[in-house]
Image (cartoon, rainbow, N blue to C red; front, side, top):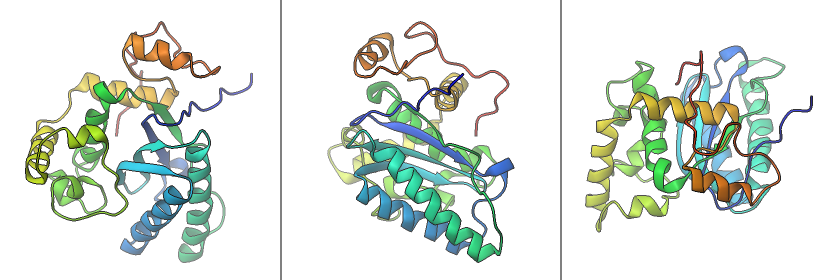
Length: 234
């Protein structure tokens, strides 16, 4: 049976996960993190993809991104993957594959899941026990959104701007939202949808999305909760 084509639609936010092969490290030094971010910025601009949020973990990374074109996201990920593997293999004196197959991704409903997905991404290092607070982790977009540094890679989504009328108000509201965390149902739904490739959103959103593509966007009935079995979220 042919594998299902990846669900990719322009002007919709997508959550992506790319893992190292056999969960091996994809970054070892600070230079590795910086090079991966440089290549991401370069290819996001080249292929017209807005990066709303990111986190680089030791053996995988997450992105929340909106492509302007139908092919922009897969083209960006292909170019990023190839360029970074060449760099990493040379710097680590290794050969062979680095990635665990194709990246995982799905389309999410902005109004219901976008800010939740941003918090999910920011909280990855906390869930992994790497830091006590998301602002203590250097390799994510969280610091940008809470006013600790300016990150030229990041393009805030319109929903972020609605959090307040001033930069300080938006930063404070976002920091409070992330500190409150997300519940286990939201976490499992985001993970399952991304890993399976099924769209995540309310019934009307999924139904309208299906009208825009011949590719199936949901496995079960539209709106039925998407929960992973035997999968540990990161």
